[in-house]
Length: 232
Ligand code: ADP
Ligand code: ADP
Image (cartoon, rainbow, N blue to C red; front, side, top):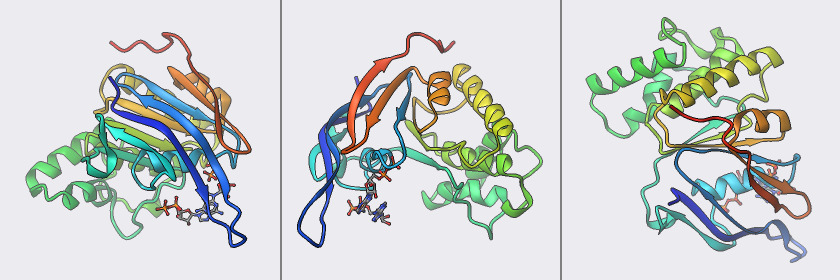
């Protein structure tokens, strides 16, 4: 059964001229436990728009998104998003950045400190607690982004072009580390939804690939890659 299921969702934007721009054509898709799904498509094909609808950040113009079969408007979704540009708070330390979502949820200090230190260790940031984002390389900053997303133990981890701002080698390292953590079930998430325009990245990471075509964003194919990444 699916964690998130979209039923015939579409998105159009109003224009001053009253012509509507259709960005996503009616689309069905589901996110199930145990899978890394890649959403692959060229720039402007509607990937971010689709991600925003699946995470409840934006309402579909038509159709419905379900969280455990409840409409998202009435559901308590437990998801996180990793952004291409990291989106860290520059005035907070690594520790404070990662702890922020737990603080926002009202978790008491000892428990949130324990969980924050554990996830920093998992993503290879042990010893960097007191550093500020500007003191870190791009790859290390994105590790903070991953830690902050994972610290809440999201059922679905969304990633919007998470490696695109990094140099090739750093991206490769981070990708393979993420895959290893996922396969060993070390990272606390049930499913990963990866937005990317990088075909190689999709093939390397995903169990399932959804391809968005352009004009207007329409799901062209939704296929299983095969049991390429069995989990222990
Ligand atoms: P991608 O993430 O694949 O690059 P986007 O979802 O960002 O694609 O955008 C898809 C299309 O929708 C683009 O043509 C973009 O300009 C348009 N678009 C996105 N958001 C809005 C909006 N709020 N209003 C009008 N057009 C938008
Ligand atoms: P809602 O469904 O809640 O109205 P939208 O899906 O319209 O939200 O999202 C609005 C977001 O899209 C804003 O963050 C805005 O900055 C961004 N946006 C607006 N116009 C465009 C555009 N032409 N291309 C890409 N993004 C856009």
